Length: 239
Image (cartoon, rainbow, N blue to C red):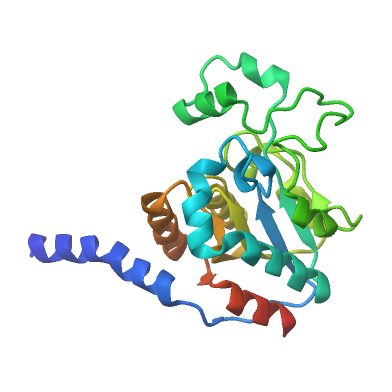
């Protein structure tokens, strides 16, 4: 009996993983007026070939066609009147004084990923690794997209994303961005904990390697309300 129960428990993640891979048809409609697109870290250091961490993501981004797919989501949201929220990463000089950053956090700070010099006037942002990828700027800097304060670790606990979503009457989120297994995953978890319904677009994300991507998609299948591909998300936005 114990062996049977253990085998069933071990099989659950595999079952959800298969569902996450195949769940491309929307299982519920996106509520008009209450759904938003949220994109995490659409910034140069992850997405531009000159970015400090681009090399970690390059293969996965190419395999998924993720950079194009994220642009398709931006475009579809704008065309169909869905509000767009961007949750960027950013580190200022004071962040280098942390006493006990985690291992990856320490590495990001040492490599100056998303490094900023000016927390007051943003005079150093343009063209930096923390700046938005150029092809996304027409969608992000249109005066309508909500750009939250920078998150510091991985999730939106340290920024105003949930506050901004609630104050716009949003209860459903279409989620994309980077890093698939870190910031995007953490945003998914925190938003679900706050009662939002979340759909993750699995080919509009990027991870530092195949194993990290597989781990992320497995978690999406366990936690998210649905896991779609970009075609399904774009179609759902248009309904």
